[in-house]
Length: 517
Image (cartoon, rainbow, N blue to C red):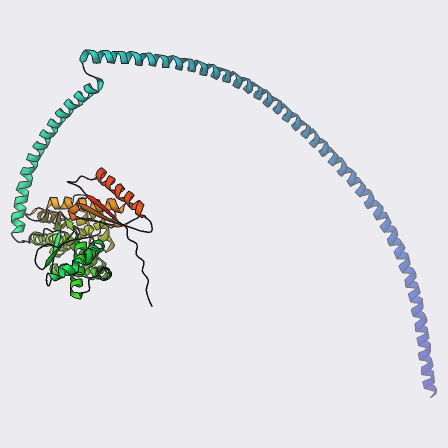
């Protein structure tokens, strides 16, 4: 027990001594830190003064340097301003001198212009004097010669014309004789060699079609009450109906084969149907026009079958069929093309060439004629374009382009087709020049009418002696229809050459149609 008390006492004494020692140590440390802080502050003050002096010195040096640079820039700027002033002064002096020169030049130009006006007046006076003298000399010359100026000119031109006509006639006669010798020899040889192997019927196209009737009473029904049926047929089809004393037959007359064929089918259908009146006529005509496309395709297919040609585009077959309703100098274009194809094939076989290719080229050589009235351009250009469109052989394309000499032939087949074309066109009975001219005149008549404003359609009838023009009633009034007829008459007189007279009939008809439901 006493030991424990002693231990506790010792511990307590130790604690007290430790606390006192810690207090003494803390006090000593505090005094030491205060001394160090004073020393640091003093040192910082001394360093601050030193840094302050250094910064002040540097600022003064920098200020001096800036002042020096500024003074230098001011001197340079003053020098530049002075130089600019000198240049401006020089430019002003130059401008003043230029103004003076321009003023002098303007004065000189005014003086020259005045001199030119004076000279021009002098020249005009001299020209007037020369013209006066010239007229006096001309009058004196006319008086001496006994001829006026116009009469003398006419006499000289007449003598020159007579002289030139004589020379031209002589030259033409000489060249014709020379050409006949060559042409006769070559054509006779070719005709003998080729036409011995191929002969064709006379294909001259006529301008009339005969329609057979079951009895003569049908003529009266076709004419209709007061002639209204026959007038409707002629108006919608554009053909002439000739009804005469010929028993059980009427005649359709038109220069256009397609128009005549449509009229024939229309009349025959009306005869079979038995209902013949204006409304039915128009209905049958519209249906026939729609069915004609199939008939055209049939003509094209028959031509290909006849020649044994295959692999032809369907659209091209239709165009070939259209040749059935085109003519050239009275010769049916499709029959002519088939004939050229046959002749070309025969000659190609004799020479060892591809006869089927020659036959194809011969059939298509005039294909442009099928649509040359629809597309602008010559039938050669149109035909070549169609052949390219439907991917025909290059030989066929060249044949179309060269068969009239527009381009040089690049193959033997092209030459053969050109020869066959000539044979088909020149053989006896093939063509009729007067018919072609006649048909062309009818086309021209219709074109003149169709060019007029407000015209719906026009038909050349009575062999070109009458032109019937149907106008649009909503555009042309009754009074204006007389003006249209007069304008067409004047244009025909100005542009066409024709025998006899041509009657121009303008038809204006207004219909009111309602449909009961």
